[in-house]
Image (cartoon, rainbow, N blue to C red):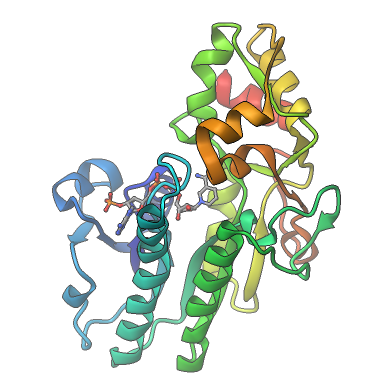
Length: 298
Ligand SMILES: NC(=O)c1ccc[n+]([C@@H]2O[C@H](COP(=O)([O-])OP(=O)(O)OC[C@H]3O[C@@H](n4cnc5c(N)ncnc54)[C@H](OP(=O)(O)O)[C@@H]3O)[C@@H](O)[C@H]2O)c1
């Protein structure tokens, strides 16, 4: 297959490119830094810098849409929110416009979203039928999904990737937590009762491959392992896996003062279950946080 990937140079995208190349697919990656694509995504991967380089007569069989400016890195000013929005919603809208223009429509679009779609629903267990939240992250995910879903009118099968916290040794939130935890400075966030829905990157990539190939899978998918944990449990498990204490607490009011609205990413959470993946026969190599951390940190 010829597969177009946005966000192919990112933490998730790089691993997906590797898996797709191993399956023998031809890849095109949209990147603002085309000179980095071969090194990050693999030799032979074509780089494009704008979707206009996808000409209407060129055949693209599948699209994986993961692009998005990092959500946790910078203060959520009005301008930053617009950047987060444009890099997801506006880019996805352009992608759908290109699909409309294409002479041969791709069979499938796998498009990014996040468990933030659900907002903060406390201890409630959330499968794919649960409603959306009313904060900024939830609005962003809902609109991102709605725009991607509009490709269905072109006969494209659309899968929405409601992604949880990716566990990988190559970066992401876990990558950032490692140094303080290794130094014995690991800390629970606020009261630690907020849920963290995580997934090992290997399980994420194998689920992507299933969604790509299995033609009866469509709509939203909770891309999370079946056993989410609270922040307090996550903190204990990570400290135990590193044989270090985690005695500290990062008080919620300090995080809110320092990070503003963005602190909701740390102090609120979602208890998400991968109901559709499991019901469709999907399995997880890493169902429990302890085994996922052991694998990643070994
Ligand atoms: N990692 C997680 O735990 C997690 C959890 C939930 C949801 N997600 C979502 O999954 C997606 C991929 O995550 P990731 O961790 O792989 O992200 P990442 O490592 O930060 O990579 C982001 C990718 O998006 C591209 N990108 C960023 N800003 C862009 C812009 N303004 N225009 C076009 N492309 C842009 C980058 O490509 P270039 O720099 O090459 O242009 C990069 O490849 C993101 O949308 C993220 O929100 C991730």
